[in-house]
Length: 379
Image (cartoon, rainbow, N blue to C red):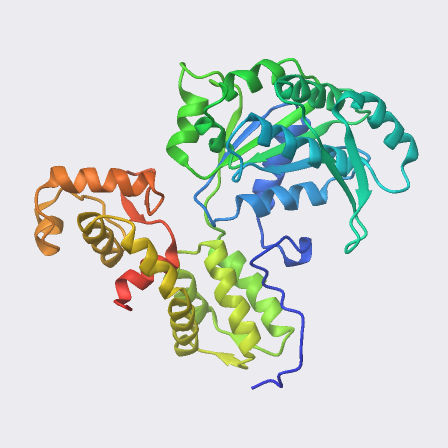
């Protein structure tokens, strides 16, 4: 056992820490960069916690700011046009302004004079910050100004809208149509539309009835290759005086189906534990600790769905992957009753993002730790 002195943990679960601590995604990064640099907007789709957000940050971090200006906007918390516009404006203005860029500061103040942006410096981080006051009924004009400002940039601008499917739920405006109107007029701004709700994202960009129909390059990402992940994990564990065999790593990878966030969570704790030789028993012990910590949250989720939905959810968790939910074997094994009610429950659970439907039509519990908790019977 290594001594417990404080050391840097290379397995981040909260933020992008640089290329050295980012695993693989070489081909995906090249594909994404190639599309943007050649003027193609990209629709990036993956299940939650596979790593699409990390990929975006990795790409943006790798680009020379003199060759492209990059802006990342997470739309998950937005619910209307005003919130969208305010978040987008703050990202653009904060990225463009530093305490020393007086020329840009003056340029932006003039360009956005009617919008009353207020620039300052965060007293804690020392980084520039911006707040913007958007007048009621002026949101669409403000959004148009932001796009126009970016289009005048001396270098190409790349904008990533993460959790883009959120705009489909806005009630105050037909957001897809509005964005499409502005975006199709731009020449110097290119976009990544990233989302985790596959059925909504696919409908938005593949249906002839929707404004963004066939307007982007579709890109799906899956879990990181196991061998590449082993090389990455082994390297950083070895630097900490720890060893994990390829066989043991395979057991870890299989346990959470290679999902990046879950892998990082367990590797982060294994690194913290400092075991010189990491065995599968240690991995299981670490996992059980995580599941115990999450039990109150998981119990709350179970209380928010119906008994029938919970029974279906537990059945899927115990199976791991359900290819034929209507089969007699599945229905009888878990005493689920008629398939019509199971089908209805599955549809609701997919909408609630508790169950994920894969491309082959099979079902699995969306969040890997939650699925393992349901399977384990921890109460």
